[in-house]
Amino acid sequence: MCKKDDSFNFAMGILAGMVGGVIAGILFAPKPGVESRKELKETIDDLREKYSPEIIKAKEQAICAIKSSKEKIEDGYKKFNDYLKARQLAKAKNNETNVDEM
Image 1 (cartoon, rainbow, N blue to C red):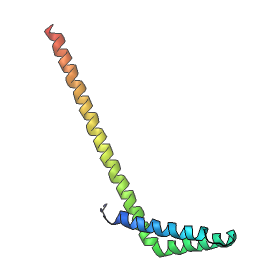
Image 2: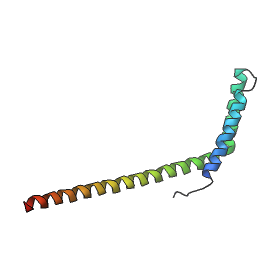
Image 3: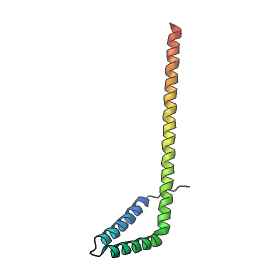
Image 4: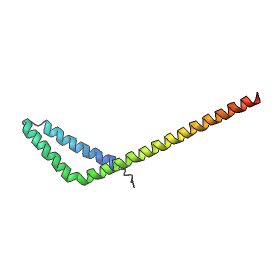
């Protein structure tokens, strides 16, 4: 079951900031390209190993949030569609009544 976690967005922001900072630091460091790419790959691998459980949890929470949003949108669409159909039916009945009175 999906569980709403208020700190999810904050944690994702911190993680994205850390990754962005590390990548920017490596890319703008005055080193040769080969060395920078090697260091970047090592850093990403280290982050992946270190934060793998958090990344998996964040992915699960994101999927849960998407499913929940999808369900809400589908429910809203169904209600709106039912409302339009009911309105059209009422209008048709009203027109039918007006024709019968003529």
